[in-house]
Length: 111
Image (tube, rainbow, N blue to C red):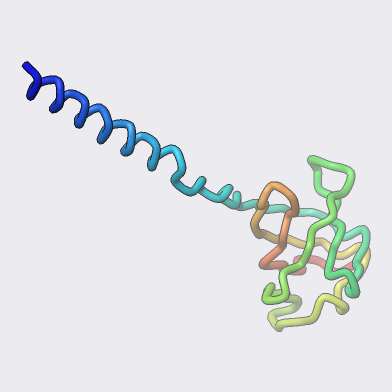
């Protein structure tokens, strides 16, 4: 009987240890969510690396532009500073819950 109680106590301690280590496991980082937008540029701030785009779903959203973003216009790669108000663009990127970060921008129609 004493051996059986000892075994139960040992099993209980092991179970508590396993549950305790699982509870202290690292929490998964929030996953990024992809986005795709088609709209018209209403503002470009090359210094802040941001672009504001008005789509049919909103009055204008500010997007950060990733340092490694591909920006295309007329079949060639261009810089953020070459974009201007009135251009129609399609773009995609990642939303991390805090910022929407554009990773690809393509000019589909110049003003």
